[in-house]
Amino acid sequence: MSADLKPSKLAVAAVAVVAAGLLLGAGCSGDTGAGVGDEVAVPSKSDPASYTKFVVDQAIARYEADGLDAALAHYNSPASIDDQWYVFVVDENDTVIGHYDPNRRGLDVKGWVGTDINGYNFGPEMLAATEAGRWVPYVYVNPAAGTLGDEGTFELKNAWVVRHDGLLFGSGWYINTEQFVPQLISESAEHFRRGGMEAILEFYNDPQGVSAGLIPTAEYYNRTDTLDGYFTGIIAAPSGEILTHIDPGLIGSEVEDLLGPAVRKATAEGGWITAEDNPAGVGPRTMRVWFIDVEGTLIGAGWYDNSN
Image (cartoon, rainbow, N blue to C red):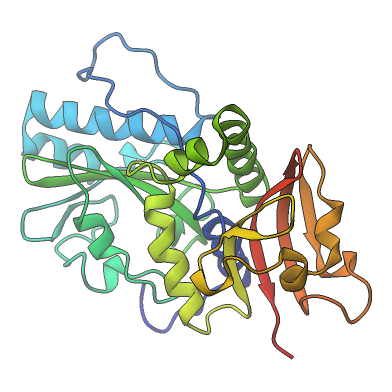
C-alpha cells in the first residue's frame, strides 16, 4: 500500500477479531498432488481455506507442466482472478514476479508491497514459508470487492504461501470475521472435548495452522496504537484461572477480574460477550469476545480495552 492511505475502521476491526483467534488452528490439509487438467476433487469455495490451498497447488502444477514464463503470463493477467482468489509469485531474490497488478511486480516483498494498510510488515513471514506451506494474515485489497484500478476494499486476507523450487507461490481468502472466529473457536472446543488441554495445544501449535501466522500479527497490533485495546485468545479453567493468554503475565489470574462477570454468560453454543453485558462500571471499557463454555472451561477470542 502507499503510505498516504489510511486504515479503514472495518479493516482494523477485522484484524482485531481474527487475530484474536491466534490460539486457534486451521486444521486443513495441503497438497492435492494433482497437475493442471488432472481429474481432481475441487474444494467448494464455501470452504475458503481448502479452496485457497487448491489454488496454490494448481499454480505449482501449472509451473511444473508449462514452465515459469507460461505460468507468469497466466497469473499476471487479471483474467486469472477467480472471484476473490488470485495467485502471486515471489522469486529467489524476494521480488514479486507474479501478480495481476503490474504496479506490484518487480518490488521487494520486504518493502511496502509486503506491508499492509496498518503498517504490519508481513513480507518476512511469507519468506519464512517452506515446502509445507504456512498461513500469513494481513489487510489487503480484495479484487472481488472493488473495481480493478481503484484501491478497492481493504479486508483481512489469510494467505497460504508455499515454497517450491526456490519460488514462493501464494493465494489467499478474505475473512468474514463474524463467521470465521466462532467457527475456529467451535473447532478448537471439539479438540478440547476429545482430548483435553493436550489435544487443544497440539491443535493450536500446528505449524501449518492459522495460528502460526496470527501470532506475529497479533503481537504487531498489540504493540502499536493502530487499534484501541488489546486482543488475544483465552482459555480459562472452571475455577476461573486463565490458562492461556498472549500476555504470559496474565496466566494464572482470574478471567472475571480481567473481563468482568459477563463471562459467566458463556454457553455451550457460544456467543459474543460485550462490555454492555457487564454491570455499569465493571470490567473493560469496551469488549467484544466470543466465548464458548465446554463443561466449565471457557474458550474464547476477542479484544478489550481496560484503559480509563
